[in-house]
Structures are given as C-alpha cells and as structure tokens.
Length: 101
Image (cartoon, rainbow, N blue to C red):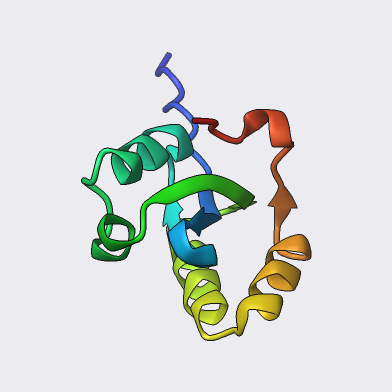
C-alpha cells in the first residue's frame, strides 16, 4: 500500500499596504513566511523601498499557474480595482489567518 502524497499548499494572491499608502501584490504558498521576508527586507525590491505595513487582503487559488495569472491581472488594475479584484477572487482568507506585525 502506498502512502498518499501530502496535499500541495494552496497558492495565495495577497495585497500588502506599504509605506506611503502604496499597495503591493504578490503570490506565495506560505503567506506568513513571505510577509516576514518582506518585513525583513528580503522580499521584493518594491517592499525594500516602501516598507510593508500589513496584509490587507489575501485569496487562495488552486494552483501556481492560476495565482500567477491572477497576480498579473491584479497588477494591471488601479488601486480601487485591486481592492475590488481581491474581494471577488478565489476564496478570501479569514482576517484571523492574515499575518500581523
């Protein structure tokens, strides 16, 4: 009898509020670790320049491919569109599941 492979971690499209009221969108399969990396200056160049303050929204997607497509579409949106896009995208994560300072 073979062991079942562990279920892959779901991919998450997330939106950060950064210094200067800027928004940053990204994807990950470990939101807490990725947010910690951004806060420590090991994330994207954008978040090194504009320190991330908090996760404002996150949405689970079924695969990395879907997450990349959603991220690309999200980054093309104006600020209001980014917030509206995440509100209707995938399965929103409960605010208790979002990383805090």
